Length: 74
Image (cartoon, rainbow, N blue to C red; front, side, top):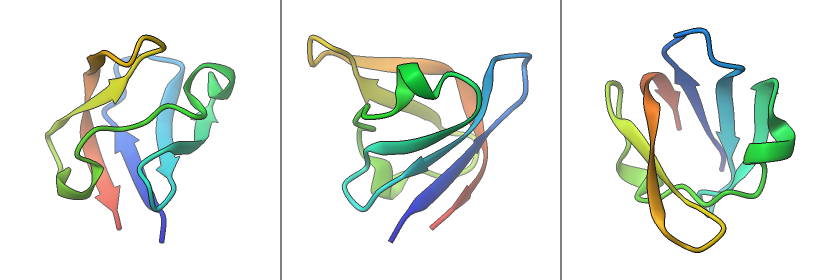
């Protein structure tokens, strides 16, 4: 089961992430897949519209995205 997250559009290079069943980004559109694929999203199962997504960086520190969720499909 995958989760699709659509972000608010504030001019950033990515608008949509698809997560696998473990909350890992497996697709990023339209750009920056090279940066975001493989990132772990924190508390992905409880995300809802309006939330800020948190992910784990290369040092395993939790970081927030500055773009809120516009739509999420489970």
